[in-house]
Image 1 (cartoon, rainbow, N blue to C red):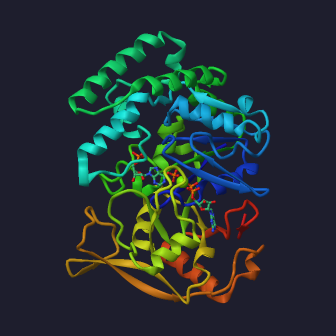
Image 2 (tube, helix red, strand yellow):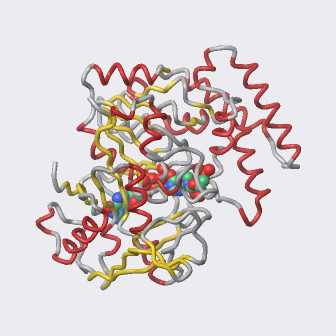
Image 3 (tube, rainbow, N blue to C red):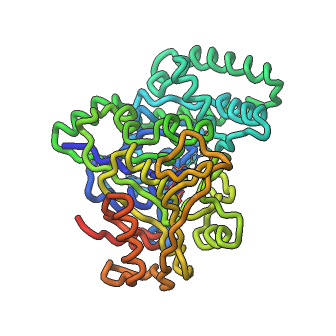
Length: 421
Ligand code: GDP
Ligand code: IMO
Ligand code: MG
């Protein structure tokens, strides 16, 4: 069997959590492959709303195994709080959630270092989620990291050595901090981790594949935040792209099946960095208000703008997307005209390629399409789609060269229209 991948094609928050939950009944195992508690994946069903950060979004559909893969960075303190909040609404959580021994740990000092580096950057700050993501991946790559499996072997010494190294760095940056309360919470988190099944997830996943099991790999963040292909340095510290599913789970490229690329009918971004189609006017505010565009982790208002098909085509190319999923077109329900950026003009020259550097010299070129001005949130099937919306879908499919399999018309699990199997 193969591993299907679901990932974001923009700057995150495309609705990955909701769609993974919807697709989960088709799979035996759901596995997160990268990122950490910088993610906030929202699910809504039966009038309830949940935001998942490290736990995969397949956890609510009973009986499925959920895996936190080796590519993830895990903060035990936040993980403990997350699973405790879930335990009442999630049956047998501890018996269905497995954690890779090779996943790296986010230490309390990683969080402090994240804040210290951001304050040092001043106006050039990345606008990180402050969860210690960059410093934890830095330690992984520089071969100084602590892994989940280490909690079973000689942990105390490894932890103290890492903290002492981090404290030297914090002192060098004259950063004021109080480690004790963070550390106490973190060590409680380590105890909580021990209640879970720690596995060699690479081996486990490949054994399950050989046994005919189906796996959905859940991405976090989005392709435009990828460490290699995003708008560097305003990116996260992992490979958010399809390739990240291979390294983040130990799955060979030849094992990848479908790649579901998810995008919003417009664009949002949290934190700093280029955003060619960003709107600073009433239209942008309407997206924010109607789409509740406030960070699910930090509560920060998300920057909003029109859909960017130059960026989207680039993401589809890097990820090898086989099926597209569109979310939140309902947010555009009231618009008379819908704009889509189809090319950039850079220093007077038109291009459809995503450039190395995006600065103020990039001017988005738009086409205008007719809005549908109909409430889509109650729609149950694509037969109900207004003519203008069908024209919009056709335009996107032709421009992007990939079919749109699912259209999501609201945050609830039920507000999902599957166009083909
Ligand atoms: P993720 O990080 O990709 O899982 O996305 P987030 O959960 O951070 O942000 C997506 C937000 O949009 C959440 O509040 C979802 O409940 C909501 N959402 C998802 N799909 C739709 C949709 O089709 N329409 C509307 N209006 N909201 C949606
Ligand atoms: P989900 O999975 C949106 C952004 C941060 C910042 C940059 C780096 O919910 O889509 P980091 O803390 O990772 O070092 O921050 O990346 N960012 C996200 N933006 N959704 C996310 O995750 C994000 N995770 C990180 O805002 O600009
Ligand atoms: Mg999110």
